[in-house]
Length: 242
Ligand SMILES: NC(=O)c1ccc[n+]([C@@H]2O[C@H](COP(=O)([O-])OP(=O)(O)OC[C@H]3O[C@@H](n4cnc5c(N)ncnc54)[C@H](OP(=O)(O)O)[C@@H]3O)[C@@H](O)[C@H]2O)c1
Image (cartoon, rainbow, N blue to C red):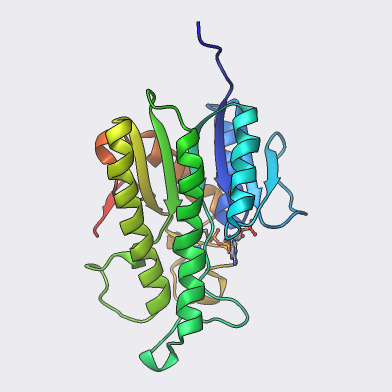
Protein backbone atom coordinates (compact mmCIF):
# COMPACT_ATOMS: atom_id res chain seq x y z
CA UNK A 1 0.00 0.00 0.00
CA UNK A 2 1.28 3.44 -0.97
CA UNK A 3 1.63 5.83 1.97
CA UNK A 4 -1.18 8.48 2.00
CA UNK A 5 0.34 11.94 2.13
CA UNK A 6 -1.59 14.99 3.34
CA UNK A 7 -3.24 16.90 0.49
CA UNK A 8 -1.81 20.36 -0.12
CA UNK A 9 -3.23 23.48 -1.79
CA UNK A 10 -0.94 26.43 -2.47
CA UNK A 11 -1.76 30.08 -3.10
CA UNK A 12 1.07 32.19 -4.51
CA UNK A 13 0.61 35.89 -3.64
CA UNK A 14 -0.81 37.42 -0.50
CA UNK A 15 -2.52 40.48 -1.96
CA UNK A 16 -6.24 41.15 -1.64
CA UNK A 17 -7.45 38.17 -3.65
CA UNK A 18 -4.59 35.80 -2.73
CA UNK A 19 -5.14 36.22 1.02
CA UNK A 20 -8.89 35.75 0.64
CA UNK A 21 -8.35 32.61 -1.45
CA UNK A 22 -6.08 31.08 1.20
CA UNK A 23 -8.63 31.92 3.89
CA UNK A 24 -11.45 30.39 1.83
CA UNK A 25 -9.50 27.18 1.18
CA UNK A 26 -8.80 26.82 4.90
CA UNK A 27 -12.44 27.47 5.71
CA UNK A 28 -13.54 24.92 3.11
CA UNK A 29 -11.35 22.24 4.70
CA UNK A 30 -10.99 20.18 1.53
CA UNK A 31 -7.18 20.21 1.71
CA UNK A 32 -5.28 19.11 4.78
CA UNK A 33 -2.65 21.80 4.29
CA UNK A 34 -2.83 25.26 2.78
CA UNK A 35 0.41 27.01 1.84
CA UNK A 36 0.78 30.75 1.21
CA UNK A 37 3.75 32.18 -0.67
CA UNK A 38 4.79 35.83 -0.75
CA UNK A 39 7.88 37.77 -1.69
CA UNK A 40 7.31 39.66 1.57
CA UNK A 41 8.89 37.85 4.52
CA UNK A 42 6.78 39.76 7.06
CA UNK A 43 3.25 39.09 5.94
CA UNK A 44 0.23 37.93 7.88
CA UNK A 45 -1.30 34.71 6.61
CA UNK A 46 -4.57 33.17 7.78
CA UNK A 47 -4.37 31.01 10.94
CA UNK A 48 -3.54 27.44 10.03
CA UNK A 49 -1.73 28.24 6.77
CA UNK A 50 1.91 27.32 6.17
CA UNK A 51 4.14 30.04 4.77
CA UNK A 52 7.10 30.33 2.40
CA UNK A 53 8.83 33.55 1.37
CA UNK A 54 9.97 33.51 -2.26
CA UNK A 55 10.16 35.81 -5.23
CA UNK A 56 8.59 34.23 -8.27
CA UNK A 57 11.08 36.03 -10.50
CA UNK A 58 13.96 34.27 -8.75
CA UNK A 59 13.75 30.75 -10.12
CA UNK A 60 15.89 29.30 -7.34
CA UNK A 61 13.43 30.57 -4.76
CA UNK A 62 10.61 28.78 -6.62
CA UNK A 63 12.67 25.57 -6.50
CA UNK A 64 13.04 26.03 -2.72
CA UNK A 65 9.26 26.34 -2.40
CA UNK A 66 8.84 23.16 -4.47
CA UNK A 67 11.21 21.29 -2.13
CA UNK A 68 9.39 22.62 0.94
CA UNK A 69 5.98 21.66 -0.45
CA UNK A 70 7.17 18.16 -1.38
CA UNK A 71 8.04 17.60 2.26
CA UNK A 72 4.58 18.77 3.41
CA UNK A 73 2.45 16.40 1.38
CA UNK A 74 0.84 15.81 -2.01
CA UNK A 75 0.30 19.02 -3.97
CA UNK A 76 -3.18 18.92 -5.54
CA UNK A 77 -4.09 22.55 -6.25
CA UNK A 78 -2.13 25.72 -7.02
CA UNK A 79 -3.57 29.19 -7.52
CA UNK A 80 -1.22 31.97 -8.58
CA UNK A 81 -2.80 35.22 -7.42
CA UNK A 82 -0.03 37.69 -8.20
CA UNK A 83 -0.20 40.54 -10.65
CA UNK A 84 0.57 44.16 -11.33
CA UNK A 85 -1.45 46.91 -13.00
CA UNK A 86 0.29 49.96 -11.58
CA UNK A 87 3.21 50.89 -9.36
CA UNK A 88 4.63 54.29 -8.34
CA UNK A 89 6.60 54.22 -11.61
CA UNK A 90 4.27 52.30 -13.94
CA UNK A 91 0.75 53.31 -14.92
CA UNK A 92 -1.52 51.46 -17.37
CA UNK A 93 -1.19 53.20 -20.73
CA UNK A 94 -4.08 55.37 -21.91
CA UNK A 95 -2.52 55.82 -25.33
CA UNK A 96 0.29 54.51 -27.52
CA UNK A 97 2.32 57.61 -26.63
CA UNK A 98 2.73 56.17 -23.14
CA UNK A 99 4.30 52.90 -24.31
CA UNK A 100 7.78 52.23 -22.96
CA UNK A 101 9.89 49.13 -23.52
CA UNK A 102 10.84 48.96 -19.84
CA UNK A 103 7.23 49.11 -18.66
CA UNK A 104 5.97 46.60 -21.23
CA UNK A 105 8.72 44.21 -20.15
CA UNK A 106 8.15 44.76 -16.43
CA UNK A 107 4.40 44.10 -16.63
CA UNK A 108 4.98 40.95 -18.69
CA UNK A 109 7.62 39.72 -16.23
CA UNK A 110 5.20 39.99 -13.33
CA UNK A 111 1.94 38.97 -15.01
CA UNK A 112 3.12 36.22 -17.33
CA UNK A 113 6.72 35.08 -16.74
CA UNK A 114 6.33 34.74 -12.95
CA UNK A 115 3.20 32.54 -12.98
CA UNK A 116 4.66 30.41 -15.78
CA UNK A 117 7.84 29.74 -13.78
CA UNK A 118 5.68 28.71 -10.84
CA UNK A 119 3.88 26.26 -13.17
CA UNK A 120 7.22 24.90 -14.41
CA UNK A 121 8.32 23.97 -10.91
CA UNK A 122 5.05 23.07 -9.17
CA UNK A 123 3.10 21.13 -11.82
CA UNK A 124 5.69 18.30 -11.79
CA UNK A 125 4.98 17.80 -8.06
CA UNK A 126 1.34 16.94 -8.70
CA UNK A 127 0.14 13.33 -8.92
CA UNK A 128 -0.57 11.91 -12.39
CA UNK A 129 -3.61 9.78 -11.56
CA UNK A 130 -5.81 12.31 -9.77
CA UNK A 131 -7.82 15.43 -10.49
CA UNK A 132 -5.31 18.25 -9.97
CA UNK A 133 -5.55 21.99 -10.60
CA UNK A 134 -3.17 24.75 -11.61
CA UNK A 135 -4.91 28.13 -11.93
CA UNK A 136 -3.53 31.62 -12.42
CA UNK A 137 -5.55 34.76 -11.95
CA UNK A 138 -5.82 36.41 -15.33
CA UNK A 139 -8.33 39.15 -16.26
CA UNK A 140 -11.21 39.57 -18.67
CA UNK A 141 -9.28 42.47 -20.27
CA UNK A 142 -6.79 39.85 -21.51
CA UNK A 143 -9.43 38.64 -23.97
CA UNK A 144 -8.40 39.75 -27.48
CA UNK A 145 -11.87 39.33 -29.00
CA UNK A 146 -13.49 41.24 -26.11
CA UNK A 147 -11.16 44.26 -26.37
CA UNK A 148 -13.44 47.05 -27.50
CA UNK A 149 -12.01 49.96 -25.50
CA UNK A 150 -8.25 49.72 -26.12
CA UNK A 151 -5.84 51.20 -23.56
CA UNK A 152 -4.03 49.38 -20.74
CA UNK A 153 -1.93 47.89 -23.55
CA UNK A 154 0.76 46.17 -21.47
CA UNK A 155 -1.62 44.80 -18.84
CA UNK A 156 -4.01 43.41 -21.47
CA UNK A 157 -1.17 41.92 -23.52
CA UNK A 158 0.50 40.36 -20.46
CA UNK A 159 -2.77 38.62 -19.51
CA UNK A 160 -3.38 37.47 -23.12
CA UNK A 161 0.14 36.08 -23.10
CA UNK A 162 -0.49 34.36 -19.77
CA UNK A 163 -3.66 32.81 -21.19
CA UNK A 164 -1.78 31.42 -24.20
CA UNK A 165 0.94 29.99 -21.95
CA UNK A 166 -1.71 28.30 -19.78
CA UNK A 167 -3.30 26.83 -22.92
CA UNK A 168 0.02 25.41 -24.10
CA UNK A 169 0.85 23.98 -20.68
CA UNK A 170 -2.63 22.48 -20.41
CA UNK A 171 -2.15 20.50 -23.63
CA UNK A 172 1.21 19.13 -22.52
CA UNK A 173 -0.04 18.27 -19.02
CA UNK A 174 -3.24 16.57 -20.27
CA UNK A 175 -1.14 14.07 -22.25
CA UNK A 176 0.27 12.84 -18.93
CA UNK A 177 -2.83 13.36 -16.80
CA UNK A 178 -6.25 13.65 -18.48
CA UNK A 179 -7.70 14.81 -15.13
CA UNK A 180 -5.38 17.81 -14.92
CA UNK A 181 -6.93 21.27 -15.05
CA UNK A 182 -4.80 24.25 -16.08
CA UNK A 183 -6.87 27.43 -16.33
CA UNK A 184 -6.94 31.19 -16.05
CA UNK A 185 -9.48 32.90 -13.78
CA UNK A 186 -11.18 36.29 -13.98
CA UNK A 187 -12.04 37.42 -10.43
CA UNK A 188 -14.42 40.27 -11.33
CA UNK A 189 -13.63 43.82 -10.29
CA UNK A 190 -12.36 43.35 -6.77
CA UNK A 191 -11.69 45.94 -4.10
CA UNK A 192 -7.90 45.61 -3.70
CA UNK A 193 -4.74 47.72 -3.95
CA UNK A 194 -4.52 46.81 -7.64
CA UNK A 195 -7.96 48.18 -8.57
CA UNK A 196 -8.16 50.98 -5.99
CA UNK A 197 -7.19 53.90 -8.32
CA UNK A 198 -9.64 52.68 -10.99
CA UNK A 199 -12.81 52.08 -8.99
CA UNK A 200 -14.54 55.35 -9.86
CA UNK A 201 -17.62 54.60 -11.89
CA UNK A 202 -17.75 50.94 -10.90
CA UNK A 203 -21.30 50.36 -9.54
CA UNK A 204 -21.22 49.18 -5.91
CA UNK A 205 -22.82 45.84 -6.77
CA UNK A 206 -20.09 45.18 -9.34
CA UNK A 207 -17.21 45.89 -6.97
CA UNK A 208 -16.66 42.59 -5.17
CA UNK A 209 -14.97 42.18 -1.82
CA UNK A 210 -11.94 39.86 -2.00
CA UNK A 211 -13.85 37.42 0.23
CA UNK A 212 -16.81 37.29 -2.16
CA UNK A 213 -14.62 36.90 -5.25
CA UNK A 214 -12.48 34.20 -3.58
CA UNK A 215 -15.54 32.16 -2.59
CA UNK A 216 -16.84 32.24 -6.17
CA UNK A 217 -13.43 31.43 -7.65
CA UNK A 218 -13.04 28.40 -5.36
CA UNK A 219 -16.55 27.23 -6.35
CA UNK A 220 -15.66 27.75 -10.02
CA UNK A 221 -12.51 25.65 -9.69
CA UNK A 222 -14.40 22.92 -7.83
CA UNK A 223 -16.87 22.71 -10.72
CA UNK A 224 -14.23 22.12 -13.42
CA UNK A 225 -12.98 18.84 -14.84
CA UNK A 226 -10.31 17.72 -17.29
CA UNK A 227 -12.38 18.70 -20.33
CA UNK A 228 -12.28 22.35 -19.16
CA UNK A 229 -8.51 22.61 -19.17
CA UNK A 230 -6.85 25.38 -21.18
CA UNK A 231 -9.64 27.97 -20.89
CA UNK A 232 -10.21 31.08 -18.81
CA UNK A 233 -13.23 31.12 -16.48
CA UNK A 234 -14.82 34.02 -14.67
CA UNK A 235 -16.03 34.07 -11.06
CA UNK A 236 -19.44 32.79 -12.18
CA UNK A 237 -17.93 29.78 -13.94
CA UNK A 238 -18.50 31.19 -17.45
CA UNK A 239 -15.80 30.93 -20.11
CA UNK A 240 -14.02 34.16 -21.02
CA UNK A 241 -13.48 34.24 -24.79
CA UNK A 242 -9.89 34.15 -26.05
N1 LIG B 1 -8.62 43.54 -8.33
C1 LIG B 1 -9.25 43.43 -9.49
O1 LIG B 1 -10.25 44.12 -9.75
C2 LIG B 1 -8.75 42.46 -10.53
C3 LIG B 1 -9.47 42.33 -11.73
C4 LIG B 1 -9.02 41.42 -12.69
C5 LIG B 1 -7.89 40.68 -12.44
N2 LIG B 1 -7.21 40.83 -11.27
C6 LIG B 1 -6.01 40.02 -11.05
O2 LIG B 1 -6.07 39.39 -9.79
C7 LIG B 1 -4.75 39.11 -9.32
C8 LIG B 1 -4.61 39.51 -7.85
O3 LIG B 1 -4.77 40.92 -7.78
P1 LIG B 1 -5.28 41.67 -6.46
O4 LIG B 1 -6.48 42.41 -6.85
O5 LIG B 1 -5.33 40.74 -5.31
O6 LIG B 1 -4.11 42.73 -6.28
P2 LIG B 1 -3.12 43.05 -5.07
O7 LIG B 1 -3.87 43.13 -3.79
O8 LIG B 1 -2.35 44.24 -5.53
O9 LIG B 1 -2.18 41.76 -5.03
C9 LIG B 1 -1.28 41.48 -6.07
C10 LIG B 1 -0.16 40.63 -5.51
O10 LIG B 1 0.73 40.34 -6.60
C11 LIG B 1 2.04 40.21 -6.08
N3 LIG B 1 2.95 41.11 -6.80
C12 LIG B 1 2.70 42.38 -7.19
N4 LIG B 1 3.80 42.91 -7.75
C13 LIG B 1 4.74 41.94 -7.70
C14 LIG B 1 6.10 41.90 -8.09
N5 LIG B 1 6.70 42.95 -8.63
N6 LIG B 1 6.78 40.76 -7.88
C15 LIG B 1 6.17 39.69 -7.30
N7 LIG B 1 4.88 39.68 -6.90
C16 LIG B 1 4.20 40.80 -7.09
C17 LIG B 1 2.02 40.64 -4.62
O11 LIG B 1 2.02 39.50 -3.79
P3 LIG B 1 3.03 39.41 -2.54
O12 LIG B 1 3.22 40.80 -2.02
O13 LIG B 1 2.39 38.47 -1.60
O14 LIG B 1 4.31 38.82 -3.07
C18 LIG B 1 0.71 41.38 -4.50
O15 LIG B 1 0.23 41.36 -3.22
C19 LIG B 1 -3.81 39.81 -10.29
O16 LIG B 1 -3.34 38.89 -11.24
C20 LIG B 1 -4.72 40.82 -11.01
O17 LIG B 1 -4.24 41.15 -12.30
C21 LIG B 1 -7.61 41.70 -10.30
